[in-house]
Image (tube, rainbow, N blue to C red; front, side, top):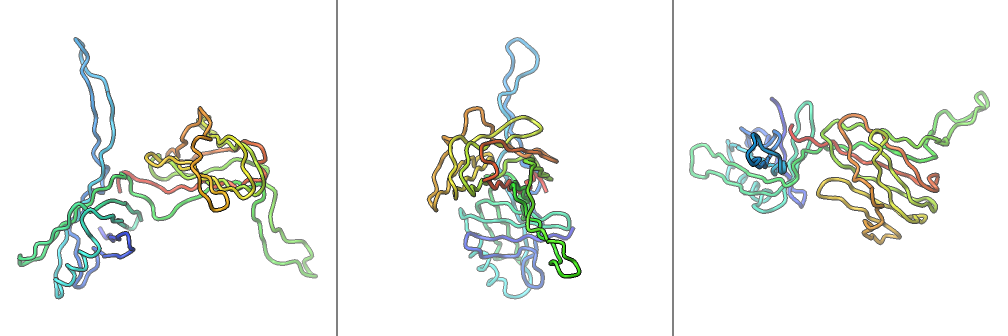
Amino acid sequence: MFFTLILENANGDRVDMTATANRYITSRVEGLNPPTGTISTSSYTGMDGSYLNNAFIEKRNVVISFEMRGVGVETRRHQLYKVVKPSRYIKIYYATAGIDVFAEGYVESCEVQNFEQLTTGQISILCPDIYWYSTTSVMAYYSQITGAFTFPFPTESNPEPFILGKYNTQNMMTIVNDGDEIGFALVIEALEDARSPTLYNADTDEYLQITGDILAGDIITVTTKTGNKTVTLDRGGVKTNIINRLVSGSTWLTLREGRNRFYLRGTGLQNLKVTIVHTNAYLGV
């Protein structure tokens, strides 16, 4: 199977582990499958079977085995060490004909056999975030004025006016998740004053509501991903944590696999521009 594998450090320096002609030849990549699950159970007293205490997925461990052939092996080895450093952040780009994803983690080890006839090596990367993410994001928008610019411009032979925008009377947003169930980012931009915007899941009736006034120019960003749940207000360039404005009973909404439908409620919706930003996430690629 043809694939590409690129490693990138925090400074943006890269090394292509699938480049040919006197570069690196990756012979094996472990950690592309879903990580191992850990299941804890306890036995019933005097009864058959057991009951579930908890179940969770362990961190991902990506192990890359490679060879270095041709001339300039020592130079390439030192180039590798400059990018792949133990305990440091690393980003892994993996692509095939059907998928283009990345994962983020930290280098556990980078070992190269220097004194063998065939120079081989192995890189171990631990990823606390268990998902592979698509390199592109998808978005769903809500605004009561939507763009509709069309051509051609009106002329003497075609006097019909062109449309710059149209009024949107629907408050429904639809977004498709082609990966596993995961959280998303919700961005609320206030063009004028508004109050207490609420995002409802049309399929589950769950909701997420932010109470209080939103002033013109405010930008509220909500992230609902496990391990990174935040509610932030950007007012005049000053960012503030406003998670306390999340109404009791609100749910950290997620995107289920397939089509997801959301709708908005609140005062002054015509003054808001709302965006749902989603990146497909995969347990296994």
